[in-house]
Length: 262
Image 1: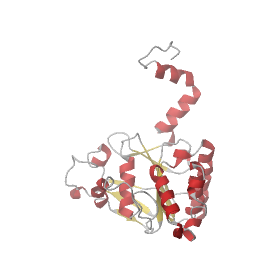
Image 2: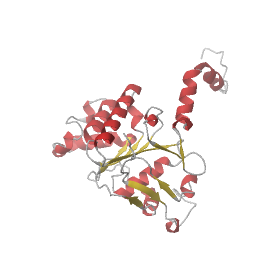
Image 3: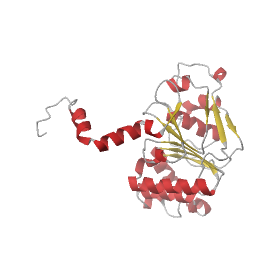
């Protein structure tokens, strides 16, 4: 399988002399403040970390640098509803040169939180259906469940070569669907060496992908960790082994009478 074969994006570098103020967002985030460079060693790279740790900030800055729409989508989709609220990553993207062995011009930026907006954009612009619509399964994404529409995107749009950035693709996928998504990723990487993924996720199922690179944003600096070091694996596996122990400790912290029926 060797997902690291012929890696395309090789290094993400922060040019620190381009930073004007380290006290403003996004440069005041700990892992961004300490970032020099990140070497990508696999065509399947996962960003992991707690909410607010900086993984989404770096992912969005990479997407901005590559020219993807801020709401998500391909470079040809310029649909935005968020106004200027996403402009704050521009200083980071401008200070973030990307080093490629061979630059991949095509790709897709998937944002779980704004995927609904992209689906609406296509429904409101029926002239886009055809070759583009086929890339989304040829059926309105709003006529499917959230999980079905995501799988339609993954199965129909990601077959071509490209550089794919995904933020929490597991958001609407059941555990069984996440396993199906792993199979999609496996088939894509095996069939096409011109594909590369960076995925921000909290899913211990997705993180189990063999041969992947896992980059943690927890702590003072970005570092590579093993699968079983991820909090997603440790918390979920620990909970499944002893749910009563976890629940007892969790509920003992609640500020109400646990013996009350309410």
